[in-house]
Amino acid sequence: MDIEDIQMWFNTNRENTLFHRYINLQKIGPLINKVSTNFEIKVIGHSVERRPIYGLKIGIGSNKILMWSQMHGNESTTTKALFDLVNSILNEPNLKWIQDELSLFIIPMLNPDGAEQYTRVNANGIDLNRDAQQLTQPESIALRQIFETFKPDYCFNLHGQRTIFGTGTHGKSATVSFLAPAQDEALTVTNTRLKAMSVINAMNNALQKVIPGQIGLYDDAYNINCVGDTFQGLNVPTILFEAGHYSKDYCRDQTRFYIYVAFLYALKHIQNNSITDTDTLKDYQSIPLNQKCFYDIIFRNVCLDETSNLNDVAIQYREVLKSEKIDFIPEVVKIGNLSAFFGHKEIEANGYKLETHEKKAIYEGYENDFVLMKNEKILLLP
Image (tube, rainbow, N blue to C red):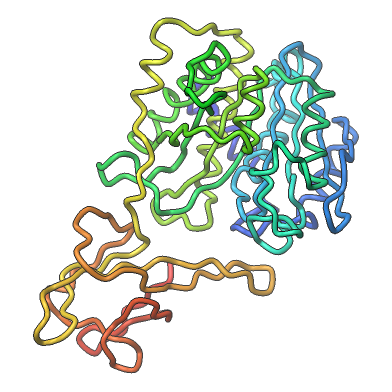
C-alpha cells in the first residue's frame, strides 16, 4: 500500500454526493441505505430532536475499532472521508483485509441536530465532547452504550479544526492534527497512550510524504469530561483526528483526502499488530504542537490615517448557514502589529489606506465582501 495506490482508490471511490461543508442527515441517509445490503446498519439511538443516529458495522476481524464523526455538527470533513473509506472497502479487492482482519463500528454522524443547524453543540446547546462523565444527552448515552457493547480495541474520535492553527512557527497550516489524549491529570505516558501514539506515528510518517510539515499535535491537557480522555482512561487507545485547512481549500474537499490517507495507514498499522518500541514517545513528541498563528487574510503595512504608524489588518471568515450552504463572511478581527502571525492569504498595502465600502477608515468588527485600497475594490471572499 503506497500513496499512489491510495490516491487511485480515493479518486475511484470518493463519495461525490458529499461536498463542501454542510453535511446533514438528509445527505448521508441515502448513502447508508445504499450500503445496507453489504454492511450491518443499526440505529444506536436518537438525538434530542428524535433524529436517528446510525452505526455501520463492517468486518469480522478480531481487532475492533470504534469511529465517530460530527460529534460537533459543523465539523463535517471526516464524515466525507468516512464515506470515501466505506466505498473503498466495498469496491477495492486490495482492501479486503479490512473486512477480514478488522471489525469497524462507524458512527458517521453522532450529532444530527447540530449537523442540521451547522452548530458545534446539540439541540440542547450542549457540547457533547464535554458530556462524557455526566452523560446528560441522548447522543452521549448512545455513544457510551456502543463503547460498552462493542468493546473496541481502539477509538477514533473524528473532528475538524479552524483555520487559525499552524504547525509550530514555520508558516505552515495544520492540515491534519492528532492527539493521544491524557488519561490522568499527571499526563502519564501509559501503555494505552503509547499504543495510540504508535498509530499516530504511522499516520504522520505517511502524511509527511504528501503534506510535509503540515501535521500537528494538540495540547494534551487533561479534561475528564472529554470523551477521548474518558475512553483513554478506560484503557482503550483513543486517537483524536482533526481535519484542518489546506491552501485555498475552504470547502475541505482536499483535506478529506488526507484524512482518508490517515484512516488507511492507521487501520494497516492496527492490522499488522505493530507494537510500540522505545522510539514511539520520541517520534510522537517530534510532531510540532498546534499554534494559533493564522488568520484567513492579513493586509501588511496599512496606513490607518495620516498620523499613525503602519499596522497590519487581519480578517477572519465567519461561517454562516444560508439555504443549506455555508457562506463565508469576512470580518476584520485584529488591527496592529501581527508580525508573529501568518495569513492564508497576505496582501502588501505598501503604506496605502485600507477603507470600508463607505470610504471610512477600516476598523475591528467591520464585515463586508470587499475593502477599498487606492479607490479599488479588493474582494475578500475565499
